[in-house]
Length: 313
Image (cartoon, rainbow, N blue to C red):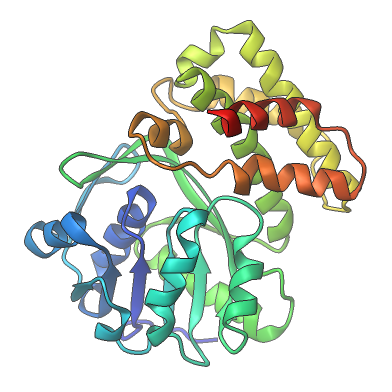
């Protein structure tokens, strides 16, 4: 397994909140080979001011990537490509990064949902696609800096594919993030980790977006807390029926996390999208969970009720 990453070529595609978090942290050590794919005013700001992160967990960070462009052709073949984008933007991101993908390129989707990595494996069969789950409450500010709030910002890294190439690639990327001080955890059961975060997103994102709440407001609303538990439970039942390994106390732990661990000011990326008038990811969250539930005949009536609410909006 590779131990020297000083010359690793790393591209971060999609410089929103999470993309800024990842690129700024990676840029603390790998800025000379770091490329970022951004567009329009965001691209102009990176060229002028660099990447700026205000983090409760990591502190104040700044980095200047070696290259910033809206064209993957400007970067050449990369060793690692992080895709930090919304699911509805994946097709356009894929077109942009295609010139950067070689046979040994490791593609790292850091995205919501359960569908992105499988799609990327189909599109880039000769590349190495690994899997991740990130936990971080981070937003992009008007000045294009990113703010991470709360006492945690960590990522699980692994691969659903169990061969040596995928497993070693995941371990290598894990080592890169550890080397820049990012709270990284290598996972032998990444599919379970993905589903645990996926169900959390379906529950927390839906309720905070529908009621325009942060965590503190959610905790004071008994009806919303009941809906939160129902969505966690329905999602858990789907996962178990699909054969996904899940902690038996998953629902209780997630309720406790949402009501005691998350910062009161924390909210979901979906609620932030609605506040900003942006497109949302409800089809890749609630829609995907409904499709999986239908496959195994599991009742997800609360999830369907929330999904219909957002689709009608």
